[in-house]
Length: 309
Image: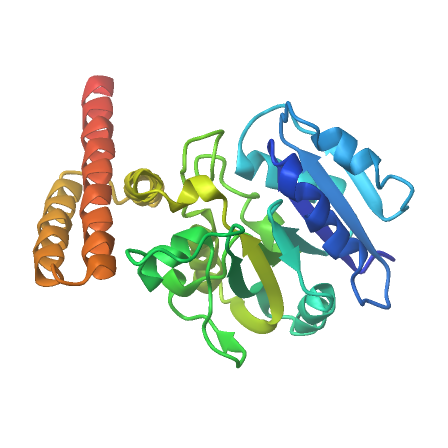
């Protein structure tokens, strides 16, 4: 293992308001061994560079500009620049607890561990309370992640650690060819599922994936994300992401239309079941709306395949 024991990586795009606090939480880590902080500026046009330069006197901090927009692209760039065997990714609008790197680092004494992430709590904007229509399921779209207070080894990909509090072993990342640039956010589109795909790959190859409750991160909720329209848009892109993930796994085809239609009807039916509960009702409507995005992507995929023949 190189002298740098763990590399903390922040991929950022136009989040100068939150970025400083994210970097500062890493600079304040209670970690006795050597570590570095890599900030990947993913085509930002705000004060991102200046925020980093204000802290440039700290030798742990590195800055790299990545002009190609895309979260997975930025993550791969961060991995190339980083020098350690353990890569820890923190979102640019999150704040890590002071033992975050230590907890993650010691977990990788387990030679079978490929991926690990921790609990995520939410920081609400000043003067704003959690909306009545926000279900626990939709809160997860804001980053909330809590599987309890004990370490858990993930067996179902749907329970995978959140990307905003996420670490990965370099050898495993190289084994699978890096983060898939077909998934992950690109600018304002909300493509996702890249972490779910990574967990699938890890489990298929005999690696382990862990939830570490003490690797705690708090995630800022931007005010614009507390609009119902944001969740509907997020649901739409979640459906598209799921369709793309199936296509990448070789599961594309006419069966996607049946699956998407059944899930759409199920979502509407459950919305009616929970009509008196505003949070669960909206949760099921978002799910149903996401299936329209899924079906739209599936139809485009079928048409594209047909045109190639």
